[in-house]
Amino acid sequence: MSVRLILVGPPGAGKGTQAKLLCYSLGIPAISTGEIFRAHAAAGDELGKLADSYTSKGELVPDEVTNRMVTERLAEPDAAGGFLLDGYPRNPAQVGALDGIFAELGIELDAVVEIGADDESAIARLLGRASEQGRKDDTEGVIRHRIELYHAQTEPLITLYRERGKLIEVDGMGTIDDVAVRVREALGSFLDARA
Ligand code: AMP
Image (tube, rainbow, N blue to C red; front, side, top):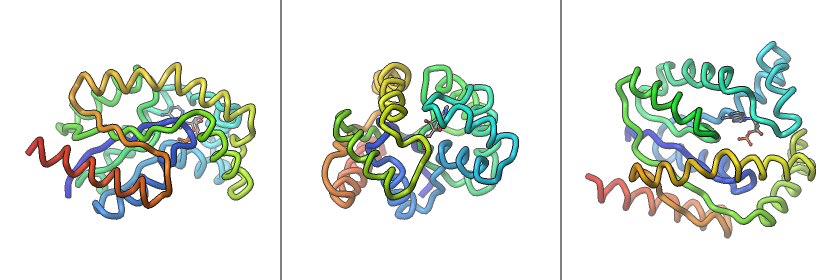
């Protein structure tokens, strides 16, 4: 199914897991800017070093760098049949850049799925993940900063996409399977209602 989606939600809401499950069932690539930065950091290349100097502190990587990376990624052949963006856009300026990329490619956004989670549950999940995955940015101070940045810079996107009639809100609390079912059902009804 050719569908173009954005997944938004606070750090610790389970976006990455839900992105993979949904993309598997839809047969589209999950494009996570955070994962691309981590892959470059693991490879030790220039982009990775630059990104790591921001991600390790929980800061956003500069828009210019992130927007260019997404422009290149969306031009790859596997994105032609649809995709899900996980963790991008993350501020209003990135929304503007993404609008430009879509216009350039002659494509339209289908929906934005918001996975909601309260701050304390999100922090608890991330601290749990820290012991499993050892991500550098999963220490309590950095986690709190990432959540603050989410409220200040990313949350305004929810209003913006709601006003555009693209927003689907899903409760991110519960088991992975519970949330996956909610996401699939909410997206299915949204796309059916539009058809
Ligand atoms: P995530 O895997 O989505 O939690 O992202 C991990 C980190 O990568 C974030 O805390 C940021 O430092 C960086 N990052 C990911 N996506 C973006 C973005 N759209 N803009 C700027 N920085 C980003």
